[in-house]
View (cartoon, rainbow, N blue to C red):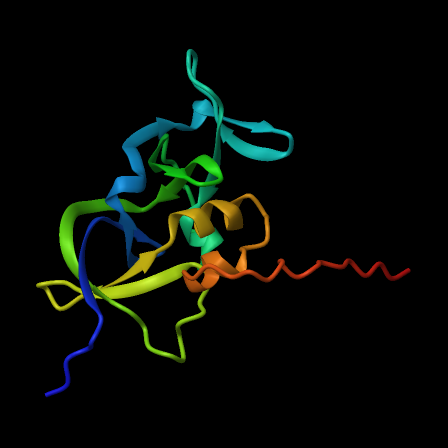
Length: 171
């Protein structure tokens, strides 16, 4: 019997996106709500949740940010949205379903998967299903189209400056 050395309990909100189960840190979840499609506008070329009396909140598909197939909206008039407070600011993610909030035993992913930029670990639920734990700050940056910093990718602070990005334009 091998037991991982680093186990920790954490409070999470479980959501489904593209049929897969994910866990978001409960402390970063501002609220879960249903939003009418009419509240989604395009601001600066990006989908944004706009409601009277509130600040506009960038909106992204959690499945899309994770590189998973994005389900068709079909006839749906309401979207299930999870609003996160992340280091990059508030952002809203469209999810298929908000499952539950619970405390889970989280474990790291080992050396080979340690540097996944959006994933901090995994948890096996009492049903036997595995939930992938996501990093809120890295998700917000990825949704905004910004580079995920090395410290966000690894969960460790680094003294090195982020790599300089280059764009190659070919005619």
